[in-house]
Image (cartoon, rainbow, N blue to C red; front, side, top):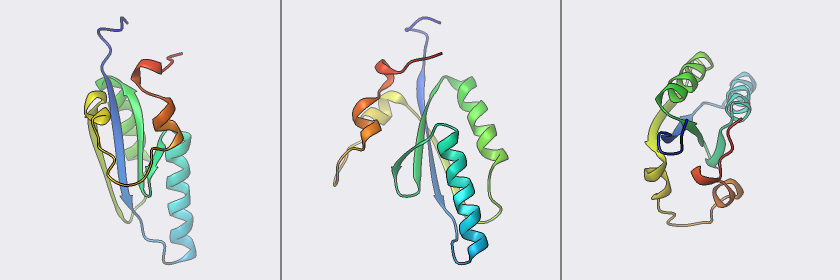
Length: 110
């Protein structure tokens, strides 16, 4: 696939899960670990994102996300182009390590 035909995108997952009991905290931890193991990086508390290469890859990861959803809480996913993601403004705070080091031009595909 040539560099011109690649369409990098970002999947952003926003979630608010209950943690009022030990069992609910365990479910929260399992979901969060799934996101990390599936290649998502924490952007800020309860907001995780990952880069995908085109619509097919995005659909694959959306299906994996749907297969690992907890039964309670609120979880949303937003799909944006890499250009839109790069234009995000940071109003307060600093970029995390991954945001400083990795962008679509530096991504390695195996």
